[in-house]
Length: 275
Length: 275
Image (cartoon, rainbow over all chains, first blue to last red; front, side, top):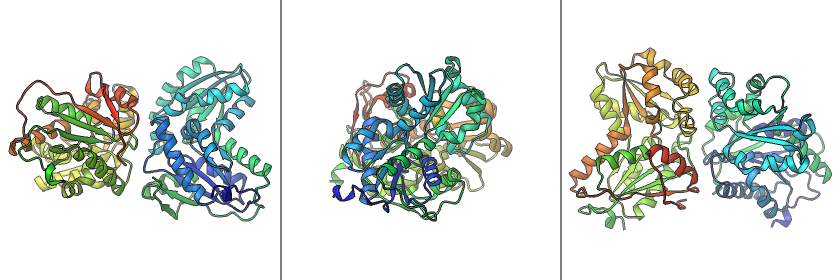
């Protein structure tokens, strides 16, 4: 069965994207922008969100179930649009599924290394992402002399979900979380969680204009395009194909918060069971 | 099988307590304080925490699985130490299991009605608890003329889990959330989430000393004691029996955060599968 899904020479198949919830929509949005002809299947595991506070073993199990659901729909590529799952489950997914698997860590790390001038790079993310050390490893593989500082920022996701994007509480929280990074003198900050691009304005203000913010979503979209092109699996450009959305809890909340992420109404979201 | 678990005349059996995570430990602590001779089995569904942002249907499914796990261990009573699960799943649990099921809503509502002078009662909780209207219903059943205002406070749980119990961010967040309740002139506030008792000091300061805070945990412990006494199922008082703790994700985080909830080291936590 997996053989039939390999997808070689099958540019018409969809790209499967998954995340624990709505956060991965920032990645979906960038893929849509870069590759408007591609069809996307998006799965948000909203019944078990978040992944960021859970153990690597549990996140690996959830990621495997999400990937299995998408590969059964014969996607040509898997995009792990979740930093926590990318940090702890990518290798296992690559080993289990015979289609390309793209995570968000390596693209973000690559970009950070290419823009830093001082080599002093900050990474913010969930507890799970920072604890895994995945960004530090990916950055050091590209630039062994880089000085990488990771800081977990567990309140940023709930703040985004609350819609407090430009709020005194968010600013105060950012000042607290980013203090050690400012002290360390970073010149580049990786936004190592798909929710964080929505906080770009506040983060930039707190860090000052000289620090470059790296949005993994944009970089991941480039990685997707490059890999598909390399395999001659890009669809010919044509009018945008509507994406399909699946969630594991009822769709209402996903539609509401997800609509804010995408900047347009989100409809036709289907509830499915993956466990 | 359920018949054998009814527990009538079986005071020696344990009391089963469950929550989505560590929050229910505030209820466990109060039961231990009031009934030091009782043995307690605690289950935290840490692989799927939180429940407060999830749909009633999903929370009901999780609550059924948690209750099934505990009843298989032949507990004499089920305590739903989670406001969200109590709000949406209590009736179904009572219908499915033939042992007494105690939730946290009714005890909290009863206490609020007994202490209010003006009849103007505020309730704070997760999105799921407030949306369910369970507290309003329970209070109105006891005092039909009461004026009940519910406000969801989704950031309080992550703030407690971050350990920011006395932090400027928490104070600012509380001021924002509680503003409508202050304007409304409540004289009583139900802490409708098991995490919130840890924020008592900040909440009292923001609301002023004249507003009475109702901690569902204490009231629930009284309800447990009363019901067991009424069924002659109280254990004779004797040296404290150690509680048993089960979680659905790895124990580390539960032990760390839970230890802060209980004020002492939490060890011997066992990981189990309930789904």
